[in-house]
Image (cartoon, rainbow, N blue to C red; front, side, top):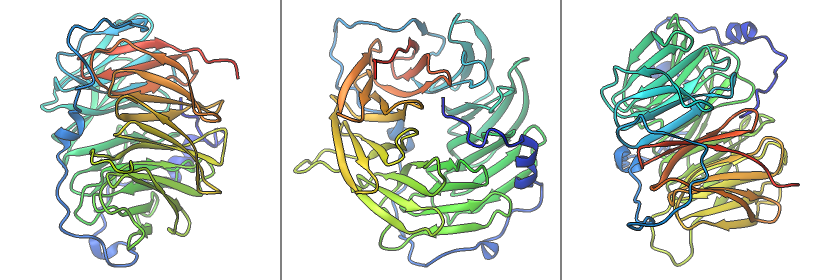
Length: 411
């Protein structure tokens, strides 16, 4: 349901600006880099543990309510990821530990086609901006693109283990970050390619900026780079004493293109100015006097309240931050870890998905929980909301994806 910025711009103009071609990737010597001093000797993250959340929140033989309108049961193992097509607001693609992705209808439950051929867990999926293509990517590094109307595979590529995947918001351009630190960009279906070469550490998170010309990438050592999509040059290299002390696991860009929000396994979030690369402020999301493992798993700027940002942590804390004053406005506590959050596009409401199997809606103005949607018998690992704001789809460790009909409280 994320809105397309600069909707009046023609997609062909964007493709021309990006100028993707099949020239050789830039060497390390060709990169534009910033200050030295990147942290070294970082322990490699265990991605399987990152996806396999602890589900102690669930008791045996618990009576639970199910608010979903449909339960998709095709997957034979945990469902890791889900995305809704912005064009139809009905088609869904889900990927799971069964090495398979499916494209199906949220309204009818009908499976349109199976995305087969993967040999490892499918952890990243997505539709192109117009719903013409769907992409599925697995932990082994295999990416496949499918023509949605026919269900036929039109392109594939194999690279290092895949950390994240995102389609360009105005063109048939696919962007992927990998464990070896490289960020790839392809024109689909031709496969014309550019690469944004990292520095050997995992490119664990990424976000295409609303202007459609730059991509922000967070790395395993806590650094952040902002890349020019036309020249493949590094515009900003955010490193040094002000960066995160460990992996950047989530990243978001402000709708006005000026600020970047990052979240890390060091239990902090940082606001970075996109033009200067300077860290504007650091939000401490750690729990006082707690020895529990913590991490900022999700972060995002508000669409309607330009001064507000939100962070969600593995200890179950949703924090609403006032960016100009650098203060905490509200804290919303969950009974399990928050794995993902999304702001509503038309109001100051925040949706959260939690390890206790529940999706919640919070009012950022007062920190109160407005609504809850239950039904899963295990942790919710991902969710998405349709562009029209009517449908929410979740992915869970209970081997199902669920469809929920949304309604909002009166403002």
